[in-house]
Image (cartoon, rainbow, N blue to C red; front, side, top):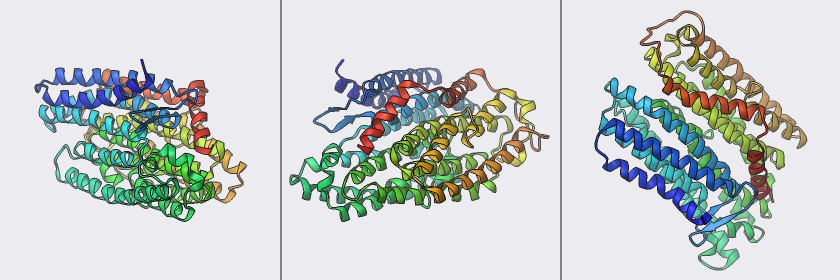
Length: 493
């Protein structure tokens, strides 16, 4: 089948699926079955689409409005794999919420529909060649996910939803200014009204763009899309939003959504890097916000008592690590940053889903009321440990690979001070998180145990995530490494 048709189908299926779910009767079995089938189709079709660009090929469709290149391929892979596993986990989670009367069938149906609409907007944001559509798609991810955050309708969830939409929309207003300025710079250089809207044309004409305008553009874009990505100091919405929604929502927001905003920044990073401004300017800004994100996250992780807020601050830390990778720059630094997008996605999806199981066991998010988890449910403890150990960079797990490569790239590029600060920040978080893990897993139970049992079907997606974390940490997956290498070539030229 033609690649262009497959790209359009990949976008339409979750969109149509969301509409179909909206009109289904309120029957949990039927709605969950359709939801699961859609997740399977989205996974298979998206990975099939990505397979076309592993070798570095680039495809355009719909009059160049959509682009499929290795950069898009990297982020589509995250959406496909993590989106599928989180959607599978969500079925059990929604069943628990119905049993606890926290959600009714109508709300669960709404949740499933919004999840597929959300996947559509994320996919559109990473395959948009038109910079205006890319901005609109990133904004649409907020609108489609805010109701998943506030679905419990209690005071804290609703406040978090409002905070999410207001702060991210203000941030994206900055991104809109950056988009308009980029179009203006392109219009002056290219000389017609249509071509400057396309990222591929701006890349081809990067040397003709006004360097002063581009410097301003990147500041606006970094603030704007950086707010959505959770980079400090624009991260203030993230801890509340990631902790108040259902665990599958927290997982998909942290594991995938933040990376879509990173992908948008990356498109501008490559244009400005190829212009007369050069990569030094964008790398310096990335290093500043990256290190700032790591240290701010470290301060909050140390004092955190809420298990989901702890993982939320981990998100701030890890987008900071990705930013440091792009800031260190060079082929190895950019490769490591892209690798970290997958490593963090797998680890954070596992962390939030495991926290969902832990909350089911204790009936609370407060780590001071937990303890002795290893005696209560060894499997959940093991999955929790894999997530924690990967997030803090233990060898043989995925995050260690990218963190090691970032340090190596920093030494190659003589960024010694920045790398020392990077290691200090990670070391603080390492010690703090191990203390939290010990508090939850060992010792005596300090609160109440609601149940010791977690269904096998609820653990299965988490087991697959854990296996993937080991696989990416131990093995060199040739197709993944080739896709990343070809994405690096496009970004750096």
